[in-house]
Structure formats: C-alpha cells, structure tokens
Length: 126
Image 1 (spheres, one colour):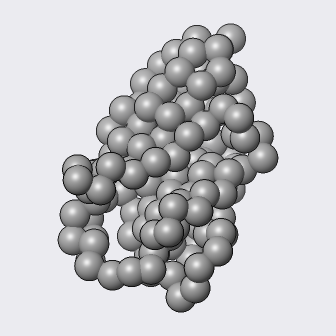
Image 2: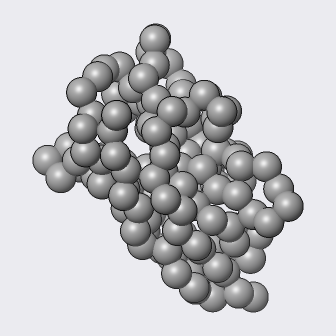
C-alpha cells in the first residue's frame, strides 16, 4: 500500500500563494490517478486537481488558472501550486492516489481514491 506524506500548508493573505507537497512511497502500479482534495468544515471533500500517469490533468473549475499540479518523478513527489488564493480556498488539503483502469481524465470522487495522505491546513485571510 503506497504511503503519502503531505506538507506545505499554512496561513496566507488573500492573493497569496502556497505550494503543497506530497511524497509518495511504495507506488508500484500503473496506470494511476493522483491528486489533491480539500475539505472545509461542514462541507464534502472535493477534488481540487488530479493528474494521471500519462500527465493528463483535471481541475476543479474554481481553481482553473490559479493552480498547477505536477509531479517530480525523481523525488516521488506530487505538488500543488496555488496562486491568487481566496478565503474560500480555506480548507484541509489532502493528497490521494488510486490505481486506475483507463486513460483520460481522473475523476474527483473522493470515495474512489484508496490511498490518502494526512491533511494539511490552508487558511486564507481576507
């Protein structure tokens, strides 16, 4: 079972930037989907951005143009760079991974992902 270790959360003012990191160990299968989810208090866990093993990305609409998801395969690390952060981006952010059965966009259904990192808090103040 892969292990995911998340880091990089913090507090920023609106308009600021943060980069989250997820170090993934024990990943032995392809194809896969990996990505970032977030959960604010009282809300469902939602997908922020995902990428598959072919590099195809999928973004939650509110993050389009404000987020970049990328992998550094040499470091076994997945990153989420977020710019122009808004107070509504405040949430606990999680890294997740699942074996996929086909190419194409990864979906953002949290329940389908089987490996999760611990959350990291992102707080954006106005």
